Image (cartoon, rainbow, N blue to C red; front, side, top):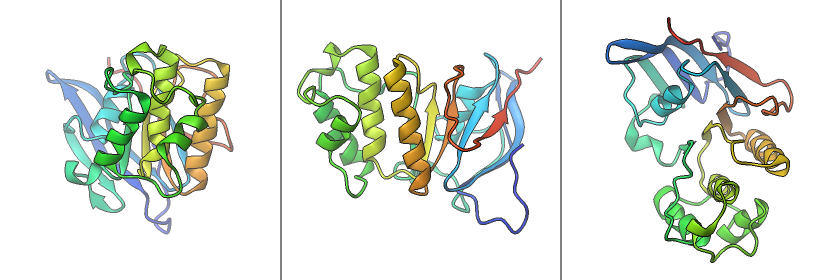
Length: 215
C-alpha cells in the first residue's frame, strides 16, 4: 500500500479498494495507493500478479471490478484520459506504414503537444536523428521502442503508465528510459513502471507497489 497522511497534498492519482477479476477469478486487489506529482513508483510482482492488468485499468482500457480511481481529485473517466495519461504497453502502438515523424504527428493530433518540444527534437533526444522518414516497419524492435519513448516526450500527459519500458533496449536505451523518467518527475509529472530487470529506475528512492499473484 502507498498512502499518505491526511495533510498530504492532493495526489495526482489515487486508487481506493481497486480490484479486477477475470472470469470471476481475482487478478489483483483490493489495492489502496497514492501517486503524487514528482514520483516514480515501481510496480513489483511475479508473472500473473496483475501488473499489466493494473496499468490497463488505470489507462481506461479495462473497467475495474471494484473500487475507484481518482485523477487530480476527480473520478477517472475515459474522456479525461487522453490528455492526462500516457500508456506505453508491450506493443509500441505505432502504425507500421507511417514513418516515425508521421507517427509522432499523428499522436500530436490526438493527444496534443507538450510546450517546448517538436517531433524532430523528440526523435533526436531518443537517438533517432536521421530516421525521421524511414518506414516504421523497417525499424528494429529497439528503434520502435525509441519512437514510442519519443511520443512520451511529445504529449503533455502528467501521468505515465509504462509496462516493461526497458524491453528490447540495450544498455544505452535503458539509461535513456531512466533519464526520461527523471525528467518527467522533475517537471512535476509522475510515472508507474513495471519491470523485471534490476536496472529499473533508481534515482532517489522510488516507492514500490508490490503485487502478488492470487492463489
